[in-house]
Length: 326
Ligand code: CUA
Image 1 (cartoon, protein in one colour):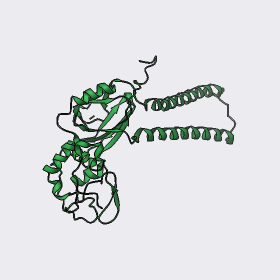
Image 2 (tube, protein in one colour; image 1 turned 90 degrees about the horizontal axis):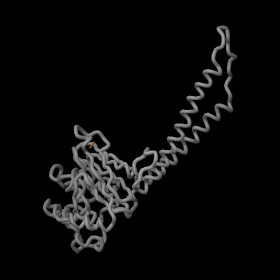
Image 3 (tube, protein in one colour; image 1 turned 30 degrees about the vertical axis):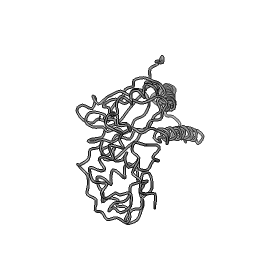
Image 4 (cartoon, protein in one colour; image 1 turned 180 degrees about the vertical axis):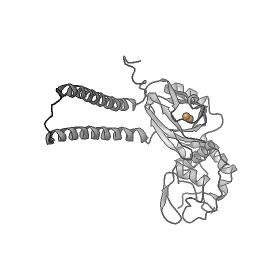
């Protein structure tokens, strides 16, 4: 369904309308003032041209009313732009709590996607219509930028940390996915498709792709095989802090201060364990830099997250008993 004037890409998310309204407002204001200024220049150039060699115009001593008008009107207009833009921005970059999480790793030159159920895809993203989707994204090399024009959303994908975007698709279909940050020779080829599917078709798709276990269960296997479980014991006898119930909570740090145990903190604690040591523990943990890939980091994070959600929500990854005491 294309409009008569295809100025904008298709609108396929709940945010597309409000982003476009803001853009149209900016365009209308810009066009209006561009025309006003251009015509004024031409009009004044003709109206006040020098008519003879000897003409000397009378000096002008300002006009308070005029100056107030051309100060106050632009001020109000720019404040409207600021307020409106800020509100759209906050909506665009604050994922709703019920959003389903999907992980994205960018690399030269492809998009690697991991779903919670263990489904993986490259340069494709399958999502159901009408559900909020949050992407947690990182890069294993340089800066990329995840851009889906039909959803009117994009964000830089940075090495060494996690960034998020979210969207709620409103229209089934196939939409362009671009890398919007120059990232090397084949930047222009770092493209893909987002498939917005009807819920039933999405379930069929999900069922067809989960061969290797859920992200959290893969994370648990890694947690065992990397021997994390030797020190991070749920019964508090280990040399590392208990990780059950930690995700999303504030953590007291050695030497004062607190940090929220979010994805970025867990990532840092795995790769640079001495950076923010939990109060009461020694900085004895070795770094896992170079030993775990970006995808494996995400699996470990998902496992640690699963330790904090009620077992009913993730039956497959329900942690072992022995705990509950604080
Ligand atoms: Cu990745 Cu441009």
